[in-house]
Amino acid sequence: MSIDAVHGTKAAARGHDQLRALVRACRPRQWSKNLLVLAAPGAAGVLGHANVAGKLVVAFASFCMISSATYLFNDLHDRAEDRLNPRRRERPLASGALGTRLAGTAALLLALGGVGLAANVRWELAAVAVGYLLLTGSYTLWLRRIAVADIAAIAGGFVLRALAGGAATGVAVSRWFMLVTSFGALFVVAGKRYAELCEREAAGGLSHKQPGELVRASLREYSAQYLRFVVGLAATVTTTAYCLWAFQRAHHARLSWYELTIVPFVLWLLRYALLLDRGDGHSPEEIILGDGFLRAMSATWLATFVCGVYIAG
Image 1 (cartoon, rainbow, N blue to C red):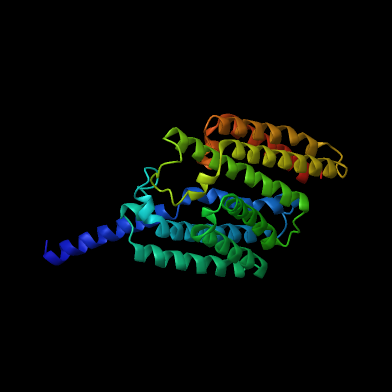
Image 2 (cartoon, one colour):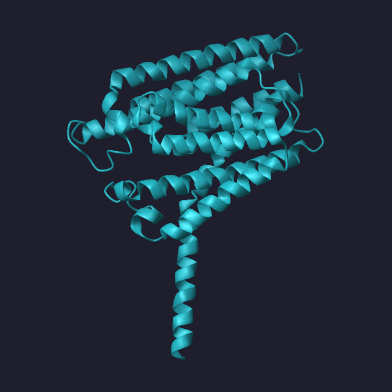
């Protein structure tokens, strides 16, 4: 084999490794969060309407692209701190498996492509996509260092995902939907911060500088008692708003499917709160997919909800 051929083979191998690292850095496992675009159209009962499914597929793809762009931007910004953190030092950019130029170019192309894709559906969806980029960019550069603002920003990202489904399909989002989505997201995000705080306190407290401290600087301003209060408050508002919505919708249905959805909904929140109290919560998607009871309640709620919206509604 000639020297040129050897160099060509090595270059191809490096390119393949870079591509694999880029895919990892885009965090495809996190794309499941973008299924929230189905929430508003699903609650409105329009999933079976003409052209709705196609618009939602495009909206989902758009948010997968822009969310991956924000992950790349975040990892580019944090790569120095991530190298010092035992949880994040294996990320492609922190470990050096992915080059900064390729990551930056990919982030820009994904952001532009995601917004462009959204604009082809409806300008309102593009506006939500731009708002998501601005919010997550502000979080990376500034908001994450400010207590309360950091959890509000992350929760806002979930809310914008949910709003994207309504924007893509022209479905009006009710105040009940906004309340449940906003405080439900706050419940999950505050629980994540609580788990992080418990882990750091167990590792030696917050009084000493620890790896990656800049990324979670707001943790120094939180206490476990305060975060438990936020979790409890968010759970209370979420449950109250959901119950009011369910009882209101039940007046328009022949069967009380909407009231029945309250049972798995509340049991899901109680089980998740129990797992948070045990110190879990670092990765909400892993908890939800990994706990059998949460999966069962999710399936029960979904089946009952579908009956209420599409059969009895």
